[in-house]
Length: 234
Image (cartoon, rainbow, N blue to C red):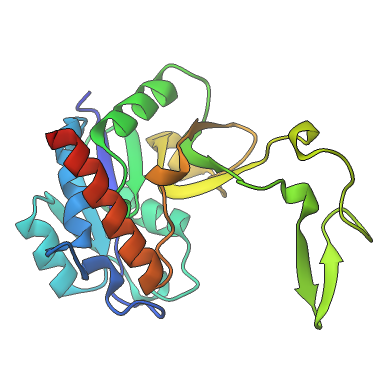
């Protein structure tokens, strides 16, 4: 299993939560939890942190990251995509002559995943024809009844009015959970998008995934993490 590496993209800037990727989460920098999960999985020959900041680099090394790759400014702004960051890291590792076949991109605030999640999805990408495997969530309410607001007017996704019918008869719809992506190195290098019809997904329950966008999300994530770890000790 040591032909795989983990890459954790962790830039310094964050508009909604200041220094989000190293903010204290239950008394430790949040990125430390992701690093420790990667270590516990025993899947990776290297755990890389891609960053634009020396403070993040030092904290990451302290908690077990094996390598730091400093990315250029063009890959550190608000519009820089994950794919470009991973491709940059792969290129730098190739230049160093480091061998690996599989890459797992893990976001630094993915505190609710565990090593079993990484192991199961690793096996899935190895034993399937999927280019990428990622964690997913099911929309809790039928998206067919959803709407957007444009110029203070409601516009239903299904047309001029919400879709009729019983909710239990509507097709279940899923979305990216924003936790991690597994893929072959060759596919990371060749692709122009991570998510496509060639992907496989790994469904996680709603209590194991939370998109931390604001301080309320942060407190909720701390509560969920504390709850699950308390259950393990019982």
